Every structure is written in C-alpha cells, then in structure tokens.
Length: 179
Image 1: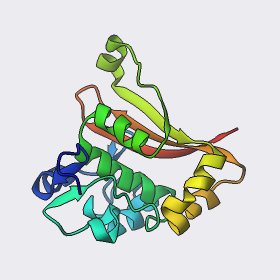
Image 2: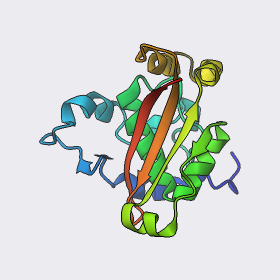
Image 3: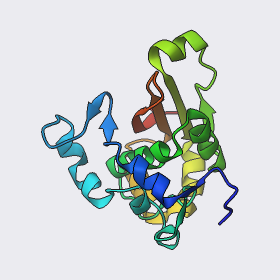
Image 4: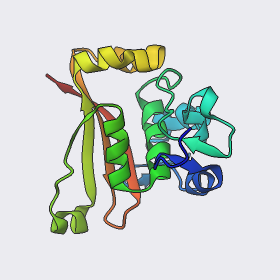
C-alpha cells in the first residue's frame, strides 16, 4: 500500500467520515425515510467504508480506497451505498474524479462553471460503455456481473456523484444509459 497515495487514508480519518449518514438525493436514509426499503439490506451489509473494500484491504491502520470490492458488492443499491461511503471518505470532488479515472472511467461534468457550483454543487459521472463494463467484470466478477444483470439492454453504466454547494456528498448513484 502506497502511503503517499491520496487514496490511502488513515483508518481514524475514514472512521470519522463514516459518521456522516448515508444520503440519497437530499434525504438521510433512516428507517422513516421513503427510500429506506430500497437501501435497508445494503446498509446492513455495508455499515462502513471498510466493509466496501476487499478483504485484504480491511483491518489495517490505513485504508486503500482503490481496493473497492467490485466482486463482493452485490447489486445497484449496495454499490450506491458503498460508492457513497468511499467518496465521502475521499471528501473532495477532485479526488472522486481521480478515483474514477483510476478505474479507467470516462468522466463528464467536471467543467461546471463557478456560479453553477455555488448554486447547485458539483455533479459528475464516471462511466463505462457496455464493452468496457464487460471487460472490467474481471475487476469484480460476480458483484459487477450482478450490476450488469440489473440491466435489460446493453447500456453504458454510469456512476454519478453529486456534491452539495457546501461540499458534502449528497448522493452516489448507479445508472444505465441506453447506447
């Protein structure tokens, strides 16, 4: 693990950032939230950033956030929870873009004008075409394949981050765009 990497963070810092509640589209997802039924299982399986990383990357004094467990994270909602956790730990839109680029995603939306960021925040999407996602399934085997199984056509798979104007992450979303 490269301690100089911006993706390797001290566990205590990641644990502090894990205290931020999971949010989706302006709503803290708790049992009384309308989105709770959709996320309940994923939140139970992935209560912390550490739970979203490969087994080899867990348990140390530092966490390598590039060790995202593509294989063990099962389905769209679990990916949304885990991406939220990892991206919240990274804390900055610039680092989330760099994280996406580490996985060879095409990233769009990073050139938003300052007045738009001030009013609406940062919104950007990393994506893989169907072919790239299929090729990258070696990153995640079953977990990423289950993400693909949710699609009824051969889409581009998008991973979207929306940061609020004050800088906090509002949501992480997985979407399918018809090619």
